[in-house]
Length: 326
Image (tube, rainbow, N blue to C red; front, side, top):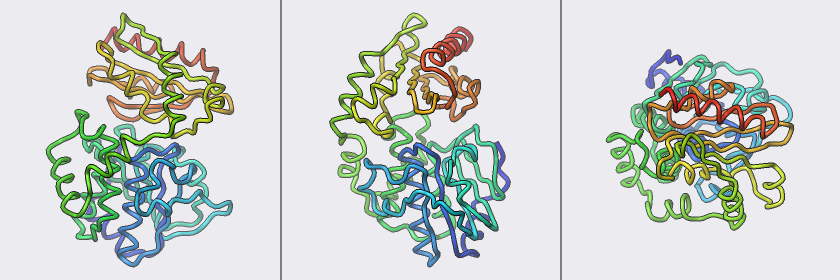
């Protein structure tokens, strides 16, 4: 992890250039979407040209956020920009095709909160103590005196609220609540946005949850809970990639469980691994690092090539080793 600049230096780079592309990781979550759109909206308020790219395009669940229509899939032919900004992304490969769609660029900026960030880019600002990249974007906007409009505030709220589990996770700090209060003052309607973020789901997600619960396994004397979801099940239900987000929290919330794992079979012979820990003594980032992934101490993931059953066995062994030697 490398931090080689200050927020003031990043702010100056934003002031002194005109054409920007903001990119976040594949399979984006609320933090990736919220801080990318918020930053692009802020740049546009400053009179800049700013576009947002993501390999998966806009998420159905987050289309209610103002400015979500800015999110586009990357073009087939590379485009040139003054500045490319990667947000909430720990490694360049996680940017997917959006990375290779960036042609000539004067400057790469890396804004992130993952402890496993590799430090790519020209201006790198990593704060692994921040519970969400959205919090870093807020600090940047505030420190620079940039515009903080209601649409920007709503996107930052979505970013921070989703990555803190609606302000419930242990990474939530007093500063996080101070920022939340400021976003409310700007115009965020907490009840309205919380309903859309956490209480509104398509019916197919309920069908998916039923399948997940039927496949749950408990190991390590009940201290680990896991689920391996076959691609055939996802296809039969008609679920989309974003429908699986958050399902692991049901496993994590089970009494006695200290590590939860969710394995999702993908096309092309790959498996997506998601892990969560209730206790910082059990570092799931180290577990996922064994599979070429990373993230945070208590929330991490990876993608590996292999069959679902084989990858599941390897992950469960790594979890067992971690639980036996915290």
